[in-house]
Length: 480
Image (cartoon, rainbow, N blue to C red; front, side, top):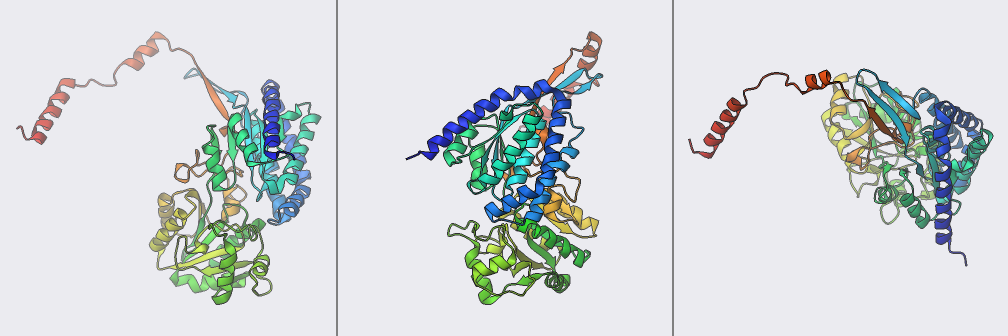
């Protein structure tokens, strides 16, 4: 009988050894050749975007291949274009005035942990940002997406070979197990963790530096000054994109009572269906597993599929199932993250109450991630932006497409940092600049400059300040 855990550990060690031996070739190649490499990968990635998308959808059962194709293009062509002029190899900056030279030094071998919800796009994205910053990368694929992830890696290997780079710069575990992934995280130089909370926590607990992301529980507030129909259209376009598998997709609509009827009517007109009574009860029963986690049977599914799993009838043409959720917390499943065609719906009296509800929703599993607002009131927009514990506050745009950089100028990314409030080491959209260290070469200043720097800006009567402080202390202690 084959010991899969042992086999996985042995394979992982071999892949990392080979990657470590191959990695110096990128540094020796220099910026120009590295840029040519990632541009070539992006070109082939676009050519194979549809094929890889169909493979991912067929293998995992999640999402829509048409949207996965768009994600593959974002993770290749648009990503490389965004960072085209970014220096990542060798000398990246020289300051002649301060006499400081900055040199990028790669981290070495990266561990790329890949989820089943966005398998091919995340593989493309992590490979490109790793190679762009002169690192090798070894992937640990989700067990339910091994074939499509491996196909993506093999595509990249083909480009490496064609451009006379070592193929071992990119590797993938063919027998993924928890033990193999644990071994990978311990022997690499940096971890890029994208997936569930348990996996991200394991990455941060491995003893190896890691960049991980928390879960998203994204509220979208439609404020009274918004164009309601446009706001609803954007929210539904975002939430139905790849059937809600992106963690930046909206999880709840929050709106004001004065426009609630109009918002509901617009949602229904655009394909939404509000669940009630027995139908709502049946959907709630299939939303979660006994431990409260998302039920894989409905993740990344369309509204019709969810209805079939729940055993209910819904109107033809329904694209989204909604619930008037009365509260926030463990007892209210529509207040949690739902990576599928399900949305919570909240009605409040004013924007101040909306602020409180959004805050509660973020604390219920989405701290540090993202939030959306649809409004033409700049005062309200800025009040929300100043107070919400998120890393991406998205204004009048779909949160899915906005967060990953499709409908905004945010950097294209499939690893969305959540900051320390969300348990992440960064609040940025992770890119190649997160995957190298900077060596600073600093020249000594001449004597005149050193003397000038050392001189005080102005004369201070130290004794007078000391006497004043002593008098204040005496008064406080009651001795005077």
